[in-house]
Length: 444
Ligand code: BES
Ligand code: MG
Ligand code: ZN
Image 1 (cartoon, rainbow, N blue to C red):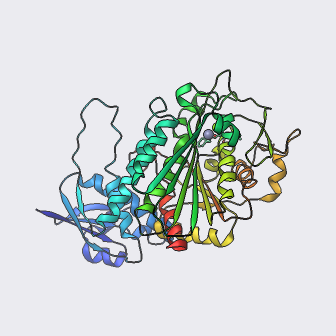
Image 2 (tube, helix red, strand yellow):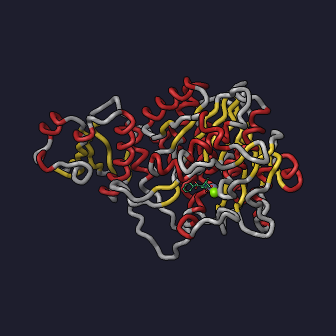
Image 3 (cartoon, protein in one colour):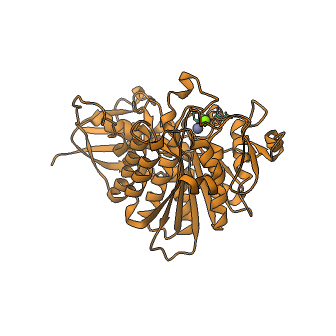
């Protein structure tokens, strides 16, 4: 087989030595080209960036290069900076092949270029997780309700996880907030709490991973606008990413007990909808007043967090498409995270830099807590200020974390828009490579 050669150059000196048309190189528009049958990728213009951004760009460039090559077989003969994450480049190449065409009846052109990579095994697993997460988010709510997500998760993790589903009157009694949010949905889409536990582990270390699984967020009686609702099939993006994360851990060598908790609801409008001003007794006994039915994610997570704390785990991670405010702060590509433990925060930041999987810390600013005061109950589910919405949402969740159990809350978009490197638009895996690295650092 004829293998095409790729060389990835990082320094100006190196490029001047190897490439003729140095003056024409510009990033991000013209840094990949073919000269004397060799494909050069010239990255001198990103050499001043920090580790996180360089590693992030490598992933994006992998996507772009796959698209540039289109067909044939390729091999990286030279990768000029060993301090960077070459795996990212190869993973980007593979992820760049993704398309969601289950609901397109016309045939598509499936010319794809093959990269011979030394990281084949790892890439294959991570690629499968990316494809799973994206497929799950892209599948619309008329095909994917709570039960379907439960089934998909179970099947994806089947080898080493046992599964349990709590629903109906048991859910109403034990997880009143999850029930309250989900009770307006039609019969087939009734709320459930999905619990998946890893089997066969010897480890005593226990992590609970919680994912917001709102299969569609209309806003409830505080109905969203048309444009506000347009993307809301992705409101189970936290759940999809958590299943992906559990899979990454399961297929790695990290021996740790994982419990996956996924509250699955549709935030719908009907005569059974919960209402603004309703008061519900949460699982942990405190009364919550509903200020806004569109702040539903924090309600379902609160009961799941209470439940998680009862088993006294070593760490709790939750992932949620929780607030528009987090996107206002950091844009759509960078999930925010909140953490009640400084050491853990530092380790997650490092894990993000090493993997090039962006995630950025925002503060659990306690002085905003009284914004959640309620007139008639213990706490309200929205703040009384238009500012700092991602923080007040995180503070609401923190109210349910007991005994200072180390806890990471991730507020993510779970959706990609086209950019200079990729034309893909749709559901996205975000933060899970960084979180997997964190778990590896702490528990492997
Ligand atoms: N699922 C949304 C948050 C969201 C919106 C994430 C757009 C990503 C993109 C969440 O349930 C919600 O509606 N949040 C409200 C909270 C508000 C009512 C306090 C928001 O962010 O506007
Ligand atoms: Mg909402
Ligand atoms: Zn939501």
